[in-house]
Picture 1: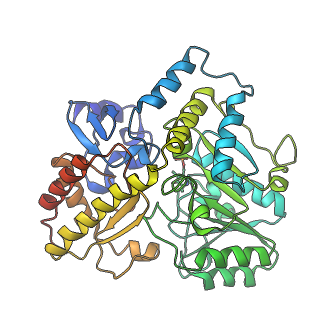
Picture 2: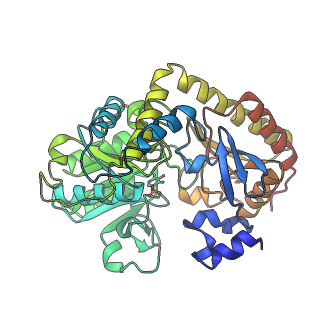
Length: 426
Ligand SMILES: *Cc1c(COP(=O)(O)O)cnc(C)c1O
């Protein structure tokens, strides 16, 4: 074990401050990072890697983007936190509204976890109903009621996904497989007038990237409306990933509440939930649903968010270029896999994608994703790292392409992949 990890483990469980960083699922020690710039990340020994983690999503412009850093630096000497409103918060909210017009009112918080937790409370507060539906394998942060996974069979009450969560809490969470509208119908049929709504990653990113089948999200919209229940789109990962907006924009579906995070904070701790104004009128101080935060709307985070969104907005070809880069990488890896006769499945959405080491024809839900050969993934991860490419250390994560990834980065990544994919399915 290296010294950094040894010392860190004396301070933190696993030596880390968020579990996936520990590299447990690939059986390695994590790299300790000293800095990152553009598409590169540099470890504590000074080794440089092409980075596809992008801080797990926020770094869409690449790391340490000059415009964002400058905007943050300008604000720093004015003070780091006021605990009082600033006009910049309204400025960022208006940028978000342009992209997500159905977020008529919103609330800034400090993490995606807070955004989804608050959105669920709001959904229950607004409808006055106790139950929620979530998708098996979807991740919405680590709040109690959302850390539920499916029990045996479909459309079951969830079982706690973590110790320390009373069954009584996840008993109010129904878990259904992704892309299974019948399971959702069954929930509504069995729990008439008890379901507050559905929370969903409209494109999943946290079981690896999994896309909604045609008509699925539309059907969820319809069934929630018919049952006077709400639909929450958790776009913490997908927001601003594939277009200046989210899945709701591309599919022209209007959820009742949307959660954003990651990119909207430009690398700083900022997330948001918002929706129709009559729904947000339930939030304190306007209404009875309580939610607050000492550092919410933090001026430095807001400055980073504004700079990020403005920079994306200013470049009319931003997403065309970004998606072309992502497509080149995807096509390149698919070509190598085909050449080597490896049955990989790549699912992608805009500039995020997952390479599933699975023999399944298609990956449509969490059960499919779990058919992946995680040993093979671990071998691939290790070889890519040895070849200078830093990927997310789990089969069930996405890789993120940023605007800072160059043609040369992609060429080098494909060369590395060509060397790494000398693998054999078990
Ligand atoms: C990352 C993520 C979250 C949690 O956000 P944190 O800022 O890590 O708390 C919630 N939902 C989705 C879809 C995410 O990708």
